[in-house]
Image 1 (cartoon, rainbow, N blue to C red):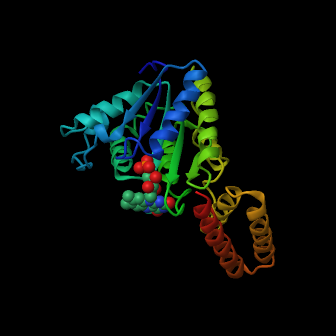
Image 2 (tube, rainbow, N blue to C red):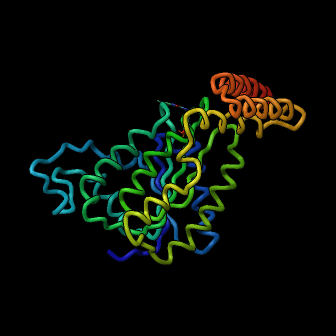
Image 3 (cartoon, rainbow, N blue to C red):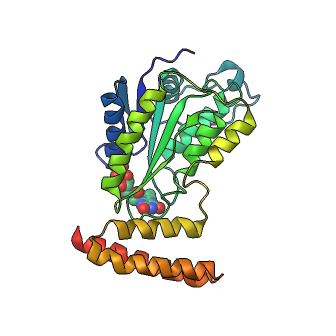
Length: 269
Ligand SMILES: Cc1cc2nc3c(=O)[nH]c(=O)nc-3n(C[C@H](O)[C@H](O)[C@H](O)COP(=O)(O)O)c2cc1C
C-alpha cells in the first residue's frame, strides 16, 4: 500500500467539540504549518462494531472484516493509506474510549499478521479531563496498538485540565515533527529494535505511584509560583521519603499535594 502523505488525526471522543478534538486539531495544525496535507476524522461518525471472532480466522488473509462494517472499512482504509497517524482518546476510567478500543481490536484481528503499517509514523494523545487519573494508563492501549502494528511512534502526550495549555503547545510541536516523518516510512530492523524503541519512549513505563506523582506535579505546575512553590517543596519531601524506602508515606504525601493542587487550580479557573 502506498502512503499518500496525509497526516490524519482521529478524534476518539463522542464529543465533537471537546478537549480531544482541540488537541488533535492543534496537532494537525502543526502538521499543516509544516507543509503536510491533513485530515481530521471524528470517530463518532464511524463507530466500529465489536470484533465477532470469525472462525475460521479468515479476515487475516482476506484483509477485510468478515462481517459488514462500513465504519471499520472506512477507518482502516484511512489508516492504511495515510502518511502519519495522530490518535487522540479521552480517558475513560483510566483507559481509552470504547470508540478507540473497538477500532484497535479489529485492526489487530485483520492486520496484525500481515503488518501493512510497518514504520508508519504515529503518536497518541490521551486527555484525562476529569480528576486527571489515567493520564498515562489511558495512553498505553494506543501505544500497544502502534507497537503491535509495527508503527514508528513518537513520544506520547499525556494531557489533563491542569496542563492543558502546555499540552496544546506540545501537540502542535509533535504535529510539526510528524509531518516531517510522514515523508517516508521507517520500518524497524526487527522485533528487538522495535521493543527497545518503545521501551525508550517517555511515560509509558511509569509505575502507578509514579503516574500519580506526575499528575501531582502537573497540578503544581499549573499554579502561580506563590501557590505552587510550597507544594513543590512537599513533592521534594515525598521524593526523599521514597528514596528512604518509605514508599507508602511518600505516596500519601503525593496525594496530599495533588488534592491541594487540584483545589487551588479549581479556585483560579
Ligand atoms: C465514562 C467516563 C469516564 C471518565 N473517566 C475519567 C478518568 O478516569 N480520568 C479522568 O481524568 N477523567 C475521566 N473522565 C473525564 C474525561 O476524560 C473528560 O471529560 C475529557 O475531557 C473527555 O474528553 P472530551 O472533552 O474530548 O470529550 C471520564 C469521563 C467519562 C464520560
